Every structure is written in C-alpha cells, then in structure tokens.
Figure 1 (cartoon, one colour):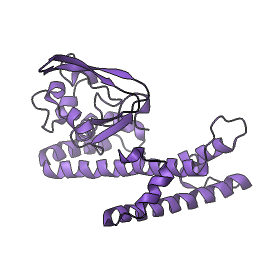
Figure 2 (cartoon, rainbow, N blue to C red; figure 1 turned 90 degrees about the horizontal axis):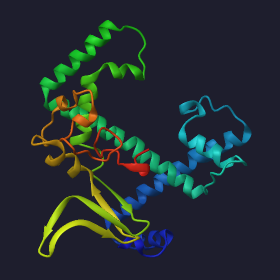
Figure 3 (cartoon, one colour; figure 1 turned 45 degrees about the vertical axis):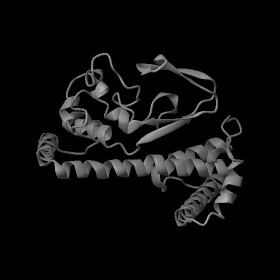
Figure 4 (cartoon, rainbow, N blue to C red; figure 1 turned 60 degrees about the vertical axis):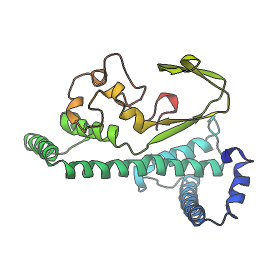
Length: 258
C-alpha cells in the first residue's frame, strides 16, 4: 500500500529518513542512474539543437533515446514529455532492455554448462551451418538454426529474467477464470476486480504450469519447440496469452515488453 501514499516526490522524501542500509543503497544507485541519464540526455540535446553529426553515436543517431528527443522537439509531434519523464524512460529502457538481456544470456550459458549433451548438439548445429555458409552473417541467419532457437525459448520459459509483472486495473473488471475454483459457497468462475486494484501475475508459475506445458513442465526440453507450430507446444486447447511463443516471458497485450 506504500505506493499509494502521497505523490512520488513525497514518497522519495520519506525514503531519505528511513534508517535502513538497503533502502539507502537503493537511493544511491537510483541517484547515480539518474545522473548518468541526465548527462546522456544533455549531450544528445546539445547535438540535436546544434544540428551536429549523430552518426558517431551508438546507433548512429537512430537509438531510441535520440528518436524520442527528436520527436519531443518536433513542433508537429503529439509526443511531448518532461525532462523528468525522459529520464524515467531512459532508466526503464536500460533496466528492461539491457539488464534482462544480459541476465538471459548468462542463464543460457549456465544451462548449457550443466547440460553437455545439449551443448554438444547446439555446437554441432552452429558449426555445420558456418561450414556450409561462409561469409558475413546477419540476423536472418538465426532462422537457419532451429535448435538454437529452441534452446533460447526453453531457457526463457523455465528461467525467464522477470519472475512476475504487475498492472493496475483502470476500471471495474470481471476476470473470468480458466480453471474454476471450488469454495465452501460454491464454484468460483470469475473474480471481480475494482478500479485501482494492483494485480500481480506470476510469469514463472505460468511458464511451469503442467496444465499448460504438460507433465514434464519442470524439465528443460528444447525438443518441445521442434514442431512447426508454436500452438502445438502447449497442451491441447490451452494457450498462454503471451506475445512470445505462448509464454509470459515478455508479458502480454498492448502493455507487453518493448
């Protein structure tokens, strides 16, 4: 309930006086992140305002922060945010787009280190492809490595970088239950959710649910993705509402991961 107390600035002010080392360490980390974001934004702002060459920057001036800043300055654009909001967007991109990717990469390496047979099969597929396709590589080449794709999908299913997500209900809603719950007063088939209620959804539970993934849901089986159709991976008639491979690793709906 703490997130509902006062304004964000008031809550930040309260945190200054809580004598807990973890909280103060978090405040320090956030302050550094905000400062670095501010420095990047100031540098980009100066280049954009002066018409400077952006090609030497990472992304050659087409990175998401530079594009947001350009859209923010365009007179005809409907997109306008404050400097504080821009810093918030940048910090979100770093956390959601960088940290999660590095975590997933580390987990894939860990999975392969503990499963030498899978590692050998994957290495064989990659070596075979490189031997038969010399020259430069691009993103489309990954489509020619089905076992690599299966290993990545299975890793994200079992060891997703985010274990849960939360959303705030914007209007009174009736949430239907796919699996009715038996209660002392009868069978529960839906749950009423009031406007403003914060709802937490477990990604890890959904990704390991035997009702969705079968009796071997807790096993690491890249082979489960070997079919031609993603909907054939899950149990008949069951499909998780995720935006990526019938799983919730990247969320679902219009508010899914960027």
